[in-house]
Image (cartoon, rainbow over all chains, first blue to last red; front, side, top):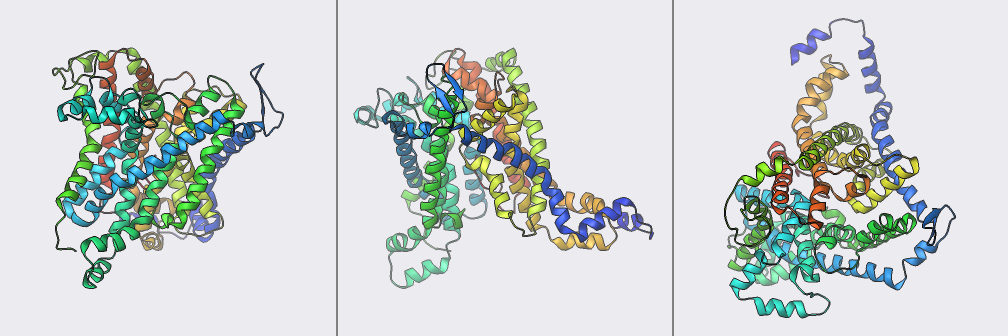
Length: 316
Length: 269
């Protein structure tokens, strides 16, 4: 490589290309602005423009009789979010998002803990890939796999039968609020699928936060006479809270916006995502759909404000 | 660091968790070779390769594969250009609005897909653009940029700036420095970012359902099959194909960026 440069820079005479690159080197502001123009144009014009346009549409009026949208500004759409029916949708989605976040944290913690503290070298790399692969594996195929698993006569049923868990499952499915007629049409089934799909997003931040835990703290705790259990409860667990909070940002916001899983698995009843989809599609009420998209944005903003106090942003 | 061993309970929970994560993926591979043609009964009745040839003889499947490949390629190219430019601009210098710009890049995958999808759809409608392949590409490129950006900026941060200064001191101009110093350093990060962006685009469904119009990408084809379970075996084969297209890039990206920081960057999807 060295020869190439010597060969190409022998003379005092400067080519336009050389003068241009010198100019860029001496004027870093110009250089950075030139680099930024294309991405800023794309994101500013296409993305932010669309988002603001969408928000603006939320103020438009939808006529129920003629099924048309007129650009008369109104707050009615945002007010309609608090109708009992719409509020129910929001509550249902929010409950699911919170339940999924809590359950993911419980399932993810031992995996992350084992990864961070008891694996090294090859095993650690293996665990890392083994968590990354399901995370990146096709979302729609994972959802499809669960419709296969939970279907009548499918894998889940086979396992339940052979393990003799039939009565227990029947009892679980009869509990109002989580149950349903079968696993694939119950809240429980939908909840399991959500936990499965977003679990890796919880494991990795917890693992990262446990990885950063200084060993000296654990030694100090042991030296001062704490039992392993006490060390875990009073040192490790509190210090992993930022990781759990960071992971829950993903599980919470991903569940909140989802409309494919609720459509495929679980009882009928809208989620925020399916509501937005139905409003703009079948009903053609773009203003109401736009107003509805504000709900996850506000909920996520509130959630972020809460987990920020738990140190989630330092663990991202 | 600790001499004590993991308890049995912890081991079972950890390895059991891995099994839980991989079992549904494995099931997809098992059912693609199942001889049965209507039900999902378990255990599978027998092994056959027949459905693979059946699936690849279906014009609607081939059409969707072709469309998804085209979209993923173009979206990845756009993401590579925009993501590299943005990371080159943001990695060293501090300036006003820098945090705002990086937030804006992350926003399309941080906000739920329904918002991005609906926002783009309403913008296209307002502008009178008919939804189709072009609008799908615009949507995909928008959320793929951050994947490339994360990979490239991580690499740039690990590449010493003195390399670039040395190159300029030795008489290379900007293009030569880019070609002989920066590109070889970025190469594998670009490839890794590009592969991940490709996988993300190939699999994306939420934004796509809004921007697709009448076009059917492979994930949309799959979703349509699910609500009308007519030909299960063909669906199973396509599911396996989509799964492989998304799994191979993550393995490739891991090996390309091994020894560095995180592979996928921020992890949102």
